[in-house]
Image (cartoon, rainbow over all chains, first blue to last red; front, top):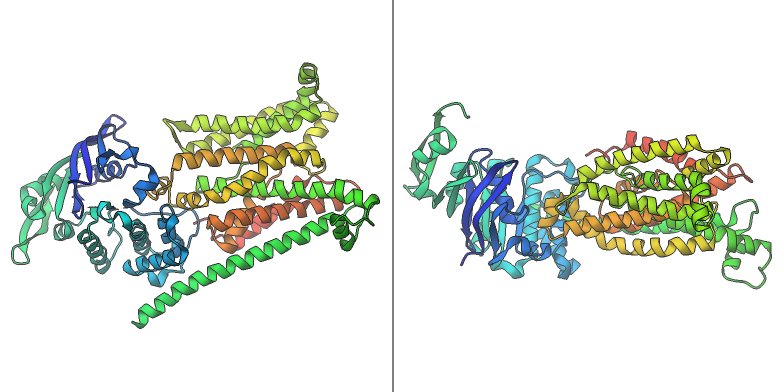
Length: 269
Length: 359
């Protein structure tokens, strides 16, 4: 039974369809990765799925109910969203940023437990050593890991809804070093094993192929392919989608596709 | 293991340090406000000792003379009005800055004060000729009502311009606010040009602000507006904190963003309208107080909003002491005092610690 569904959901802005009639179903505990070139509509699709923007036509349902019909505070216990690079208007400390993550739903949590929960999230995102720092003074990668700690805290605060939770990650590893890229994706996979559905946008196809249960490939606002990475990742598809000549080898004894870009096919339009 | 221990020590220490700083700042501000309150009751044309002020406040039978009258009927309502108006301006400033995600936002900037000012100027200049014959009240009585309605009308116009399909664009609102403020300023200038000498003096004095007309009756009008707002604002603290991450993020975190924005706008219009109505236009409190507190205790609205109320009130009551003692027995408009002290202080802050203002 799927937790989140899009039925012919479109997003039209200025006469252009950023997302065109997307059909999608997400099940609990699934790790789904969305890939595609810039401007393919990945972030727009994510905004439809999180309820941030209402669909221009079609609809998105969470647990069978239209996503825009859910009150914000109930939805917040069921899904957390990590957007792309995040700037703060005021100099909050790292602890405060993570605490804001649980404030909207954590009313029932007493201060003692809230602190323990924040501490666990900070450790899990490997930013505990930055706890007392001013968020604005951190590097881009460090800020991204603090935001990751924030969404982890939000999910933990809504743990009573565990089997109905979804984590949205928009390019969660964009500014991270190699080691932390794997750390973040490992944590996401761990959450998926515990029952949380994870939907992530990634640019690194190898990372996507390694972690995704299911891959969604977008181009021009349209979902052009969908399925397990090993089944759909082939050279013809990648060349059409990314305009790059790509060779797909099999790594890990043939179970994992390994993508090697060869050469740009032509100037991007 | 030792790294983990070291890290959890950082966490615990950060929490303790924040708690200690909050307790210290709160205690200091409360003591400071109490000292200013006593000073405000004893200083003035007639100097009354602190001991006698306390005795008068406690209703001692021995204190029934002229001094008791001065303290209870002149200085006490004036002090309370200063505390209320200062608190309202500082808290409104903090809420506006949170809403606009900009440390420079202020009710003065989005045109609320300018709208209230225009309505007051209309009342002063045209009231005697056009309004009084119709409803029979003197323009002097109409002034507070006019200012309040002007502030509210500007806010509603602004809100109408910036809201499309149930969503309020904060950026549009800021820009429209600047335009409306300029427009209101132009009309106010036109009225000043058309006014006679006496009206011009009223206009000037009012546009620079004063607590001089404080009476228990005025207090009874504004207290029921400002006090509930001050009590209600801490409930918006979580929402304002989430808004610091952005509107979309606040929604993801479980905040009803549109309702929060509407609430803040209406509360600010009411608080600023009421303040301008009784004390004229007083600048800088709404910007300096929240900024100063953010430097001292951080931007967490759960502590920031109540402390803004205390510091804002204390600061305005303190400025009022200066306003009525520097050129005694005459009085300076309080807006001159807040601007003359506030502006250089603000510049000094910018030059020395610009960390909180530009991120």
